[in-house]
Length: 448
Length: 165
Image (cartoon, rainbow over all chains, first blue to last red; front, side, top):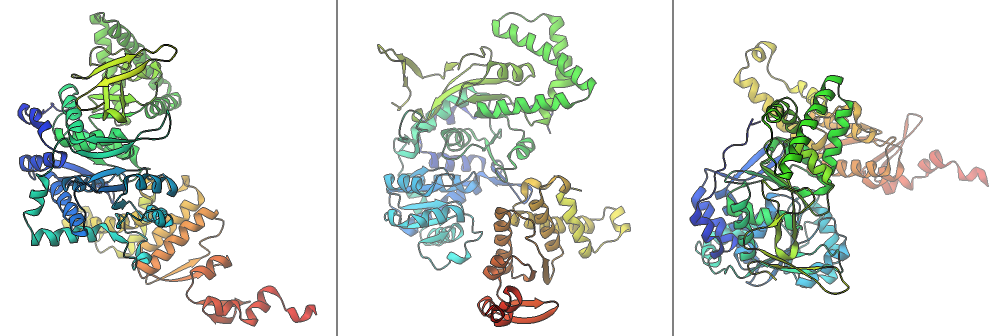
């Protein structure tokens, strides 16, 4: 594992400024032209090893999915449903469908059959991508309600032999073959379809969390994503080939915003863990440079560390307590904006090397330039705990409706009790209505 | 011993190199090790044990240990897999998982199996041919339907109905 995070290699200003002129698949094709096979776009762990996909591979699979769908009969403007896990196939499918003008809707893999039928019925999905046998079974159970769906495409073929004769079901590899055939017949078709896309078109739909009522469908355009990505690339400490690990569900805005938005536009590497259960192990393998997770994840991690420390030897515990004291003192001074005395600085230097850095390495957090928490209120104590150990942890705030996170604490002004400032070009107003709590209004490029 | 090293043990039967070659870290030895590991990884993927790879077998719950044992047996690449009461002491969910693996093994991997088991619902639902023994003597053999209706089987397992009258 690297001792220090490498230098940030930012994408050039010209590409950054022009992001808004393209759709997401168009950006993919531009990235593939620029990075070719030199840079890794996606990493996936399978059979215990990390496998790489370069930007050219990424584009190739996306193209095959796109042409496969066209060959099945997908038309511009139709909708595609997706019930998929965190796998490269998710990105190939999503961008593939978008590149031929279809709109995707990702649903939770944990949803029950009725929920899936409801969601897919609302968008009248022409094709549905299902992760595995489990999802296919759910869809077969509500087949009568899915009369708009022409085909189900399953990604993982395990256990699917017995369904072999059902023409409604198609495997992902069959889809790729269809794509390959069509590509041979009409080599120009993909490029033509790709550049017909308009950045103002709807790219994908997501369900809101439904905390204040029935879940609503949110339509997000390509420009929403590119705009959000450009803001993050400008403000967050991220650059080309930095690592993002995809562990939140694909039906959530966080991974959509990063997987479909920021990693694609900023040339980051998208990492997919082997299974849901191995995520923590794989997390340590990768040592991501940036991460956004729910507050529960961080609270859980903090309590795990504390429990382990309580079990540690007398000397380790003593050192840890010393490092905590020093760290907290520094954090207090920093958040008040006061200068740190040089004696304390040298103590911090020692405690970081002796305690905090090995500790962060153990939990896979050493390479973090920034760690974000959001979703629910987090205890300020947890934030102070991580900051005292030298982790640049911040709170942020966002909504599905706004295409992700728009409020972030800037690097040097972290107040543990706030959710930070709005990203550049974002305006946040609180609507005061008599007798009700303040309602928020957000002004973003193209949203609300 | 971890799950991985436990399963690697079974690969000794297929080892082609000797101690001398291994001590010299020869390329052929390394290649062979990679080959063995690949076979194990396929089994781990098949048995859905990715998260257990580096865990101690002794620390795993009972059903999982059985799964590791199945994995180790498969790592031998047997022509015939003999399973002696693989479902004993398992919870319903663990049994269902095991049945799923055995079915897949049989149908997709073409693994021939002999299953010795007295959980009748499992035996009758997954077997192609069933042989019934009574005190070491084979009393019937055939399809599950045939065996279930065989008078001698009913007599041996449920008792002689003629005596009741």
